[in-house]
Every structure is written in C-alpha cells, then in structure tokens.
Amino acid sequence: MITRLFAYPRVALCALLLVLAPISHAADAAVDAITQSVARPDVLRGQFTQDKQVSGFKNPLRSQGQFVVARQHGVIWTTQRPFPSEVVVTADRILSRQRDGTNRVELDARQQPAMRSVNAIMFALMSGDVQALSSQFNIKAQREGQGWRLQLTPKSAMLAKAFQSLSLQGDRYVRQVEIIEANQDRTLIQFSALAEAPATLSADEARRFD
Image (cartoon, rainbow, N blue to C red):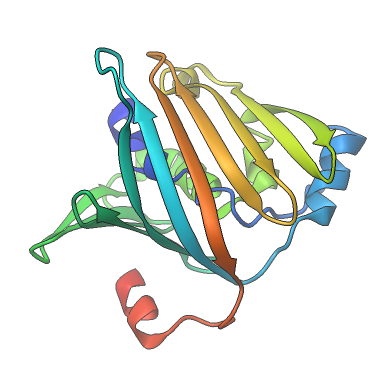
C-alpha cells in the first residue's frame, strides 16, 4: 500500500520541498542555516522536468509540466507531456485527474483514519515541511558554494519500503530533487521558472483544491 501511494508524489515529491519551513529544533547548525536562507512564500509556482530511470529501460522516462505549491492548501502537480494528467495533494487526500476530466481519489484519510499518518507524511513532502520531515527522516546538510544540499534517509521501516534516500539541492529555492527508491529506481526532478507572484491563488487554482 505505501509503495503504491508514494508512486504519485514521486512525480514531485515534492514540489516538493519547494517551500522549506523553519526547523524548531534543527538537527544541526548547517540544517538550521540552510532553512533560514530558503524562501518561504505562501504560494510558489513553477515548471518541472522529471526523469525516471526504471530498471530494465535503457533511457529514462521524461515528463514535464507545471506546479503550484500553496502553504495552506497543498500541491497541484500538472503533467503536460507526454500524457496530460494532474495530481492534487492536500492534508486529507491525494486526488488524480485524467485528461478526460475524470477524478479518482487515491487516498482519503477521512475514510481511512489509519492512513492519516501516511497522508501527513505525503503532505509534508509535497509542501516542504522540514520540521515534519525531520521526525521521519535523518537529515545531513552541507553548503556548496552559494547553494546547499540536503540528504534525507528514512527513519522508519515503513518509509524504507518506499525510499532509500532523497537528495535536495538549491539556493533560495529547491532547484533539484533526486529520489532513490527501495528498488533502486531513480527519479531526478529539476525546477525552473519559479515565481512567488501572484501571492494568492487564482479562482481556478482554488477550485482545483476543492
């Protein structure tokens, strides 16, 4: 179950982690310094390119699209190529929308209370709540010139069934995320055209969170 659920956010993980929240009790000074330097807008929009290397395939599978991260709502992850689709992650559910307009709830914590903890982790990953992530992942940090890198490894056996590790690189924003799954499949996500304006959701964006 956990592996199937994480198949959706790996499309972005995060857009992962595009808006880092401050850590109340930082694992170390390096992590604290990095999180203090990262932008924390209420709404962040941008574009993504995702390359997934799957065992048995010579070339990575590439997808491209755009995303919206809203701190008080969740993440809208819209794939435009090669096949249009959309995933919306909130604190209560993960919803997928297909090209024909049909919706499918992949997880609804309101109907499956036992899965609420899984949804909370998913939301933390997609919204960049590092304080929440630090309770689930071991975090190592290092500076790289004007930028930084964070290495995350799961603390729990449940998460270890889905991820081997996550690596984030960035400066004012997260620019790149690499996900190594437990089965050794790798996903590299790069972000571009990041923008904090407009600072509020449009009517259409707000509707898509409903």
